Length: 112
Image (cartoon, rainbow, N blue to C red; front, side, top):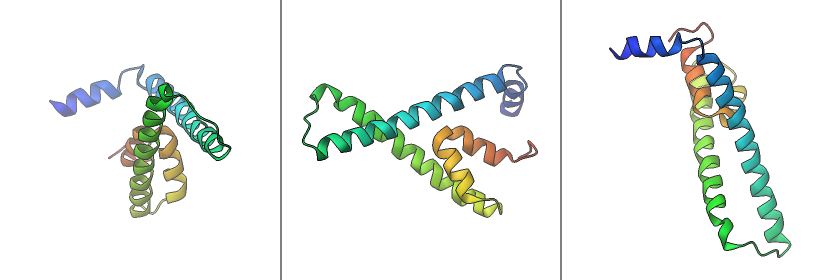
């Protein structure tokens, strides 16, 4: 049953559109998180005091960066096992997230 559901989901004509939208959105959010952390670091080094109301943004930001970093490490390891370029797949997976891992698992030919 699970295989049929997975095949039906992937055969949906909107599946590529949805995955591409998620990739673009994830890249924008991760890039924003990196910039937000750099601005925070710059502000702290220059003695700026940030409002305590922004703490939730920093926590969410760091959680996303850490989880995407872990996914990138997994992608690099798995790409090396498949004799692919680990740097390329780890950077790609860092920015797009879990979809990068799924694409790496699925392979270039669309087969598992």
